[in-house]
Length: 215
Image 1 (cartoon, one colour):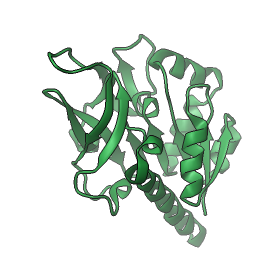
Image 2 (tube, helix red, strand yellow; image 1 turned 180 degrees about the horizontal axis):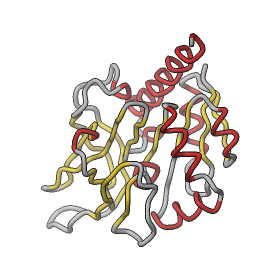
Image 3 (cartoon, rainbow, N blue to C red; image 1 turned 60 degrees about the vertical axis):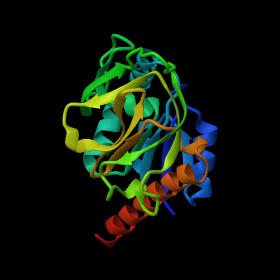
Image 4 (cartoon, rainbow, N blue to C red; image 1 turned 120 degrees about the vertical axis):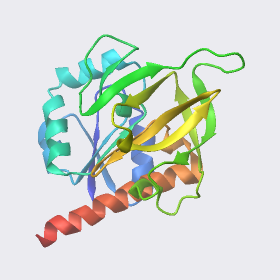
């Protein structure tokens, strides 16, 4: 099974993410080493917290370019929660530039009567890319668990893989573009559907591993 590097930059719930990957049959390796990212079969970027400290911590560890190189090489990559948001150009939460891998901005939910911010709890997804590898064998409108006050708004709508609604707002909660995938929800906190998402990513990484070995 694939060796999956889980990036440690002091902003992630590493234990839960690793446990979910282990249950799916992967070998997670917690690391902040660019060399380990290069060796790994796939990469997971988890994240909990604020946008500016996250990108500052990544840059202080000299991880920005290795992340970009890994994605450009075709290596399977999964961002989770804040790990999705920092892939974008910028965020209304802070002033630091994001990684700029996905064009677009991270925006704050608008206040509305009857809704709470942060958006917290179980919400149904609308799968706008039904063929995305993460959704394999999931129900058509799965329930996943969210905790967030900001959401990603990609400039290119074709990268959107799923949406959900909060009040009157319909927002992007997953992106997928070839080997790059990221989700706003917490799969490790989302019971059976969330663990299936992680298992699907592990399966995707294993398939890529076999393809590279054959070549």
